[in-house]
Image 1: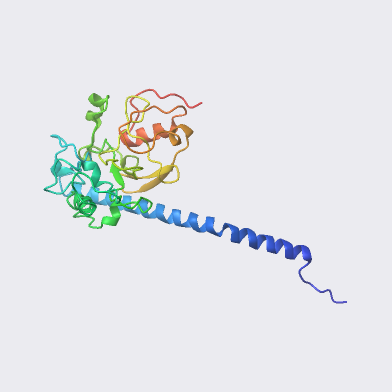
Image 2: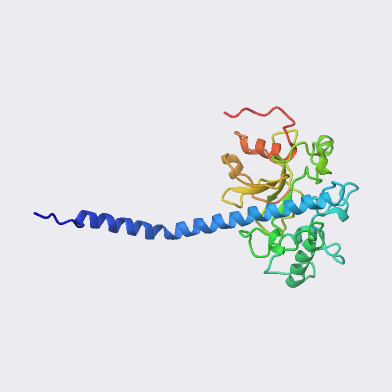
Length: 284
């Protein structure tokens, strides 16, 4: 007697349920794939910019570009800024306008078209442009329309260093590549996509001598951000602590202390400064 092999009614129902489940989750799967692709592009941009940063230093006796855009000092002259602003633009709009242009309105007597031109020209006038002449490399693919510069260098890389612990941090500031004892764990750039109009892109800061943020941690990439390091590699850090995630949005010179645990804060401080300038609170 030959047994007939085929689908039972239960098999058919199970198959239908599986198909329905897959079809229902296709949008989620596709969206997740798109987000991952954008994340990879962002990390590639950071690697390209850091490579340009390194080449600039190699061509300038090891000196790295100034990262505190908009604040010219003896140690941070405009001639060294990695992003500049175009000649002929003075007073208003301020440097922060060049990071993000509100496409819905002109400001300070400039048309939207002029502001867009200024944003692009500021990048082209920067020290890294001869090494990476591609505007898209300065913009995260997940940022909004009107955002032309998504990335910020950190304070320690020839940046601001003028928070309340400036007497110590100015001594720790890196001005040349030779000052880096290690490079694989020192942050150069991070993705700081702005959340609202007016967010600037000077250098991104965090305190060294106390358990505080200075600028707020970027959370544009699924409650985390992308970063590049002095050896040229890039990483994605997803924040672990609820207080980091629930803290202030990007933008503003805030100076705020999250609640414990402080793992995210410690990790960023070590990445920016190389170590902690205080005895950290143990994780609970």
